[in-house]
Image 1 (cartoon, rainbow, N blue to C red):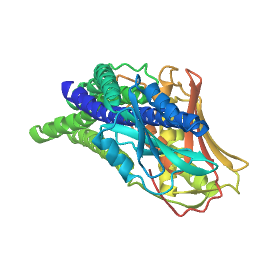
Image 2 (cartoon, rainbow, N blue to C red):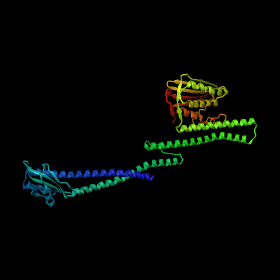
Image 3 (cartoon, rainbow, N blue to C red):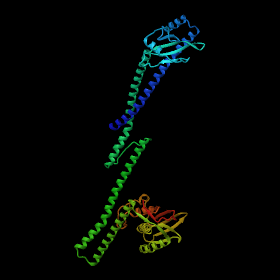
Image 4 (cartoon, helix red, strand yellow):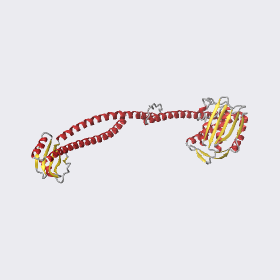
Length: 465
């Protein structure tokens, strides 16, 4: 936590320090320049005031009076004639003479600043021309010692230093609080992801935030739940595969050992060989189903569509399956309009129908009915498979399309099946762009509905996924 909060703190501090430093220097420079301009303006106004008095009465007594007025102030006045000869002065020193000697050219009536470099010079200075009838008869020079300005600047610098220290301290405190506040949930998320990488999905994060960190926390929490669910599914999937493979292999091995080690009558020998063939076929179907599902998961399951005339398709299917239904004394009917067509893969659609009808064969008994009905409304084609068998319990109905899920938890060989048939049906129907749904009521029967929208489409190939 210290590393992240330290990094965040340093970034925040550098950013805020640069901003605050810039603002402090800008404000300091603005205040300094403003204060110096005020002093120069005041000095120029004082000189112009003396100039107004002298223009009314430019005599020795008036000159003495002006000098006397400045004797008690922190400013000095020097009055010269138009040639620069000093007529009166409150204080005359070498720098004043240098400034007076450097004056050249016309001086505007409103006056002029002669020296404003308060940082290096001993004084700042202004000049105001004395005129009579628009003719310059002399000048009023005003000088102000820069010590007062330096003293003012020292006080200002002291105040800025205090403000800088206080604001820096407050900034550091705020940065520490903010960086920890930001770092804490991020560290928790990091620890959560580390736990997840080690297989521990029991992650508990605060998901109350309404900002981006809250969204990220929600996403990690959801990911943890999904991964935990997937892990449970994987365990159940591997357990189911192991069981489904073990059962036929056990029969095959057991009866093979009997045939190998014993001298059996021909009737028993044929009986055991039939069981071995049956279990071998069962194992082969299971492996084929698993292979198909694996290809579907990898998005490499190709559906080769063509324009399929459903009347001919279901007539052929009825001819193939009717003997099986008749053998179990189940009434089997098919209803399909002659004009009905669907862009589909014939072999995959037959696989779907065989899986669904095999489900009816499994759960129907003598005297029950199974029907297949094809209808079309607007651009939606519907295939309905309905039976009057034992039905599916309500609690099991939402899960029947999951892999290896079986209503009969006992896995009895009498009912057969691996729990993959309906999962394959769902994948194949979705690969055709359709939907499959089921409804059922115990001891009354089950209905499967396949819906295909946009049945007139003319796609030739469709890659599942």
